[in-house]
Length: 266
Image (tube, rainbow, N blue to C red; front, side, top):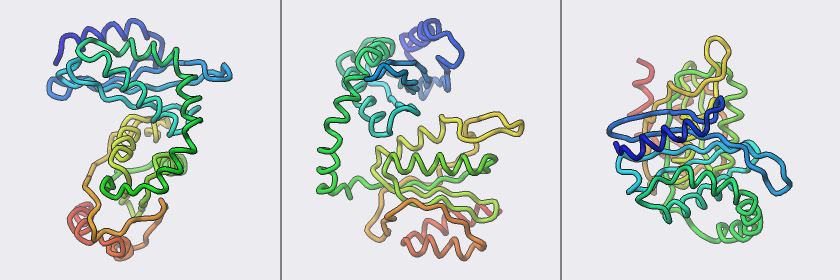
């Protein structure tokens, strides 16, 4: 792990020292450093936008670009993706030197312009996407959740993420089994995974908000020709294993079911 990355993290923790402003999520010799910075930024109408910026610094950072994820309750998912793209553009200009603090300062100064530009090109992007096939980039993700304590809130959050990221599929309940099956652009699948693993989506036994720590990625693969594309994202409950199996079979996912679902019953 780069000494520069550790020094930068230490400096960031000193700068963003208020509660929840800087949260270290993982430090690993083999995978690098993951942390979240939370800042308040003025938007177009001078309203405050709370930005949650997730940074993953690879082991060879800053020679390699950081991975960045952007989340905000005040922005749409599309706007968050635009902010992320702009930050990565700025990161490329700063390659080989510590850059996170510079990136944070940059977005604090430029957020209102990024949002304004995002709104301007939104209709153009929508028109373009309707006429452009992205079949080659369609991937599928199957997740297993151990439990949901705050089920209604959890389900609503998953539905919102799927909608914002234009993902289709199923949130499936069968007895104690909880599965999330998603299809969509690979970049959006990866973005969903980051949200799922780093957001406080449930509550613990004492009722306090907590992150999802009991999640398993059962399968992440490219959608094949024999697989049926889901047109929507739906939440469904099944009374029997046979009903759940038929859902998979209808979608051309018999092999996926046989490989991953029965072992969950043991």
